[in-house]
Length: 583
Image 1 (cartoon, rainbow, N blue to C red):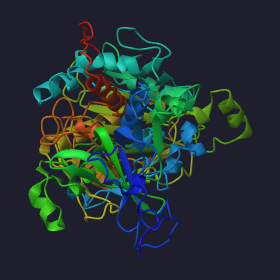
Image 2 (cartoon, rainbow, N blue to C red):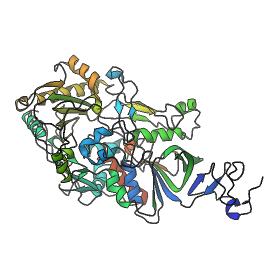
Image 3 (cartoon, helix red, strand yellow):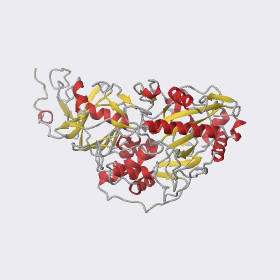
Image 4 (spheres, rainbow, N blue to C red):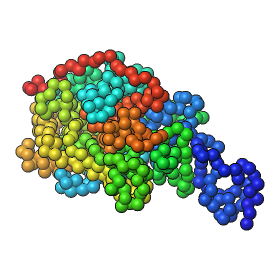
């Protein structure tokens, strides 16, 4: 049987060696003869589509939204961004206090660790955003950059060009802050940053207790010094969440050179030799193949990017072989996984907490950009050194006017307040590996929390210091009863409490690290036309919440992609203050 369109040059001329974009056609009609026969034109051939792309960005999370928004500023570049989830249309995304309600929904990848040896072989729940904006659409909105020594350390770990002075201009460029020293802060960037609008009085009492324990007030953790106690600045605009999608993507969705694909699962990357040429995807029940003229950029996060690389033949050769995946490049993809473990401690109180903050009065306040519904829950915190260092913290406390337990999966049942402790610079290392060769299978995630003696000792010391704050006299009148705290400050009781209650602060990083998997320009070693730009490229985790650093990484990557000369901030002085008065 012959196809009636076989003499149509547009359909029979062999395709060019490189397409910007093609779609594998299965089960659709021949455009010339309208035949439904699967034995002719539609049988395993391809047809060129109307649109083409220069850059394909895999993942519309924090980094992906920055890349899409910035690259499409050039009207001559055709940019596609692929997101596995759907639109960020849940009302719980915009309303800050409601973000835990997104856990284990369609907006969440809903990962979990393999059994953790230091936690009694318990699995830890790992929420990650699966929607436009990624995890910036469901995080606690805390704007923390890390410590200058983190970025200077990256240079020593194989990432020249990423020192604090070299990345600070990109933090400033991203930031639309309502206040702050202009040496450290920006006012006109796409990412809105502001002081919290909730200002819950229970948090004031927790801050007072920390001051009584010897911590100095710090009005700006991202300024001249990081140590001390104070309220966090948040990625909000008028009390509403400002995700990376809100700041970078939605304002430019009408650009004709930007195409956003949602509900799109990446199956694997395509190569001609070691040249990355395309992406095989599945959406709306159909397999399609997209080709990029310039580059493919992975921005799928510290779990997603290594999984896609390994499914595509880039990873440890001895681990890919058993899955029948041909090796393109043998690299330590998925290793070096780092995260911030988190331990909450809560007391019941007779004071009003965030529990039940849904009254008509609260809703009216939210519409005015203030009140309890604007709360990010963890409204304030402490950066401290358990070893008495004057400017570099090893732990972080977060203070919340609410009950927090069961990894945030249980709704508060009573009024309570919580303080969490986080290990900022863990020495334990985990890894991400494949579970199967199916792209829709969740990867195996081995965080290996608290595997080293140093991590355990530091974490136990931080718990004791947090218990000291919670024992301050000014808090006693607000404590009805302990809800979830160690039985005592004895090491066996603290260790038992950690095994039962510790979870994650949601900061996975470092699985495609600079110096190990990518170079300092974020190009995957041994390949062409392929970069990774997200939290996975950090050589080591920063001392603080990671979202701000991921956005700055993407901003700096834009300069790299454009070939702009590196910029440096003027020399900054990191004041040696903020330590405990008693140290």
